[in-house]
Amino acid sequence: MRVDALPQRTPIDLDAVVEGVGEDGADTTGDPDALIVYRDGDEVRVWLNVCPHAGRRLDWAPGKFLVGKDGHLICAAHGATFETQRGECVAGPCKGQSLRAIPVTVIDGDVRIRLDP
Image (cartoon, rainbow, N blue to C red):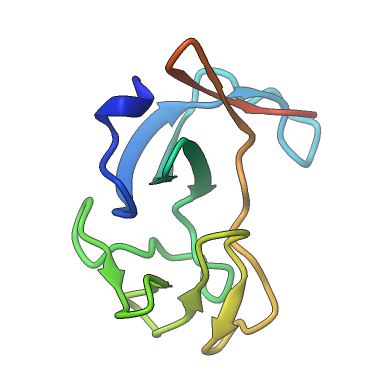
């Protein structure tokens, strides 16, 4: 995907194959993951679309995210609130935990996602 095609400060969902190895050492290549993609200026952040509180998706419908007036992401299931710099939960049932970040780079305007071992 192209960075200039992403909306500014509006989370979108993406089902994508994340290349690499998971935390348990298993090869994850080939299995699509539900992701949250967030662009702020030229910076792109990506997280797994899984709330650390209950393991549910954050969106209330596919691709429909709740965003507070302060720009924080809000889990539709239990109201956990996540800031968009590091994906840290700043309010709600999982305060202090974070969304699982997926490493992302932008090369010549192309967004590349990779889960490092």
